[in-house]
Image 1 (cartoon, rainbow, N blue to C red):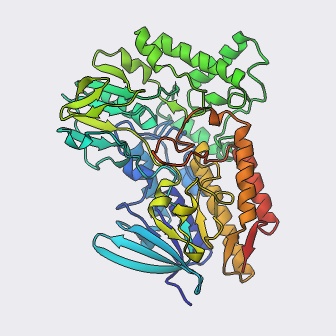
Image 2 (cartoon, one colour; image 1 turned 60 degrees about the vertical axis):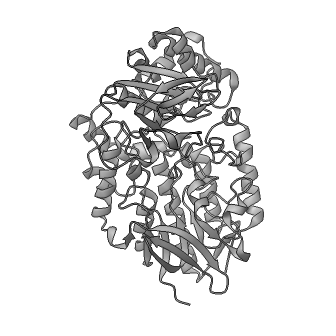
Image 3 (cartoon, rainbow, N blue to C red; image 1 turned 90 degrees about the vertical axis):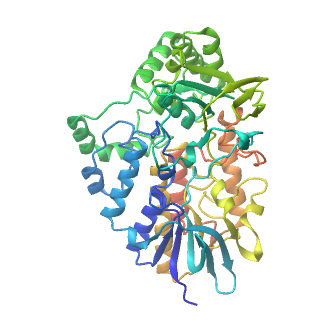
Length: 530
């Protein structure tokens, strides 16, 4: 039976854009369905004050086209949301991708037809509903694309304005002469707090759990520096593939416990001054050994005490958790904003009592606010997929399959859901990596797989349940040899009430890519074709 399209891609972020480009090269007919009114994915929605990437711009970019690398000029070391969105639009125009994209449309259902062996895609565009059929359904829905809406009593009765960082209005919001409350101190909360501290009449940051924040040392690019980077791009990309998080940096094969405290602190200070997430790479075992980890945690806590003038506030800002078991945050200004007279920090470790008409009530005390910013992050990795009714063989819903946590093979496919691919899905490095690099690898892997199928006249691919189970054991074994499980983080899904607690990403880009490439070279062992 002929389908409307060979493939439907859900999502027009960086994954969907590149997937469309590669499938066109294979000669397939493709339609991209996107909820937003334009491309960009998470960078379309996250327009909050201070929003910028925590991966350096020269690496948070496509590597598949040297022409794109050479012609695009990043203005800063860490690109702002608006610049990343401009880059996404540039790529779409450059590659003429827009004609195969359908915006303002939400995929509500994807149901596998076991008789015809294709997917039925149910789409809503305003009041209009339509159905498309396709052989391959490719989920490019992103890992951080569904806001985590907090459950706080009384929120609906607040008389002021409420904003969520992951669903920010596309018009400018003026916070001057306002008392602003920021609820949450993850990356988005920290970036928002820094931006609003300079403009709000008063800013109150409500912190449940303190996070480690390392400097970004952000700066504008001089033309000479950018020229050097562009000339060195092949070496930068090659080095990134050797690094655990897919970010090019010096690889240090040295334990933090093998050197003196003086030498340790010298190395930490060197990384602190350089700025960025590569700070955790100062030694090889900071995320592997608790004693080594304590040395870096102590260093950062001492930095907080040095920067923040009020000892009580400094203590409240100092994490007691394992350094790096939650995603590090980067900002050179965050800790210092608490030295401002118009900024206050409130401990919400025991929870927020309620939100009144006038503000937030914590431990019986009301904190007045004119606006509330909910910086409560995302239902990461599985949130968007679980909001689509995805039904595979024998009428099984993916959401039910994932009742006890997500399963899958390589983070790419799920048994019982033939011809359904998940780009940067659970069980792959995704959020533990430079996600642009992981996106490119997954898109390339999927494209090569589809060519393999075409060359051999295969119509259907599905992973075996045994391979899926063995992959889950392999991921768990790797995670258990790290310190990632030592604290509650959104990597485990604990930020979303009722979400099953399971560590979702795969630690280590080089080992992951080596395993996936080996599987492909061995005729895609673990997959069945028909």
